Length: 526
Image 1 (spheres, helix red, strand yellow):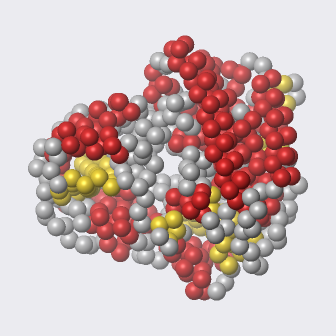
Image 2: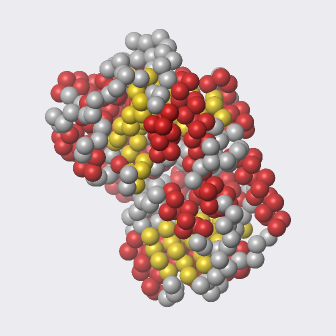
Image 3: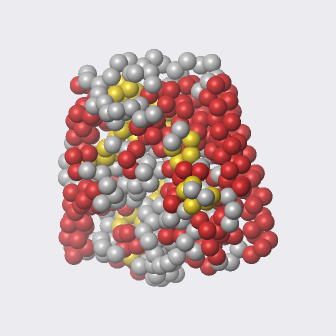
């Protein structure tokens, strides 16, 4: 999800920030750094379309960047929101820290492999994305798997992590005091930078982006970034960790773990988890290794500066379970599965605009007279009741809406139980193809699917039936009910090229890589 569209792109506007001389003799990265770590390391990807979910939607939307339509009142409102949300996030994190204060984490064993994961990745007894890897490691009795949990910033589910190893249990008073002192100093430095519009390649965007910058460079957000780095450094300095593993490179927690491992000379491995190459942050030298899908992605990663011997082709571990459902026959009941995306929550569209378009799409699907519909909401979506009202107002028959998190196997079973798969840019469309379901891609952000940053990544390859939100939805659904062999041949080639081998053994190959890297110490960086 999130390919480049026309200009300007946020990543183009901010691309030179780290090298701008902000005061005589000091580049931005040097001026705003601690322990030799640029604070920009934690934040750069948060401005892009790929990982904008961390930025509160009230501060920045890609629509604003495209249309330049906020206005003076809107900018004042965002300045107030910027300060308020920074304090709210700080307070939420402080509750988590206090809750785990004095609670010792489970002891680490020698040669432990640290796996960073999240409260919303717990599905019963399983951990999303990681469980098959952990199970294989336990069977082999090699390096000791040691999951460490965090609760994402907006979440308040930290109490369900009681009894588990969390990053919060490693935080102590000295870390807190030191982080406060450093963050205050850096926040003061941020305020003193003259003519901040010079940071951008096009300074006319500064007024619009300033509330977002002020949010990230607030003492509250910098305090948390520094504190979590120090907490992960505490874990790494135990001498028990032989490898740090994550399934992404975007969150503050992931970056804190990677750079803390780097400081202690501990290798780190990022496991690709989505249907495209990992979006690599600045300072790739902090990360030592990547497990990726295929040769194509390996070559792309090499262009970012990682040497070939540190890029490991494992295949898509996240599709190991999906492959078990491949080949199950369609029920031929004209049933429709719809996977939605957190478009509003991630600031891509205003709530009113999004749901007006969703209503139009659902009406079109209903006019195709499906036997039944299941709408699976993304776990981060907040507006279940709005969906329920739209379904009731339209009068869609036999429609079930499922919010929240479910296990991968439950998700794949639901896809397999339906005849077609409809989405608005979800990577789950690839899993639907693997299972063997025709895919309808609805461009929700633009009438023209070739310009929609949510869907252009899949529509350009013509492996799905593509339609804009204002197009012939009913006709597209009807077409999907009649499988097209020409499209299916393109799908077969697409899956092979994009994902590599899908044989249910990707987890085993990743464990092979973990065993190879575990204990491969490098020089400590001070």
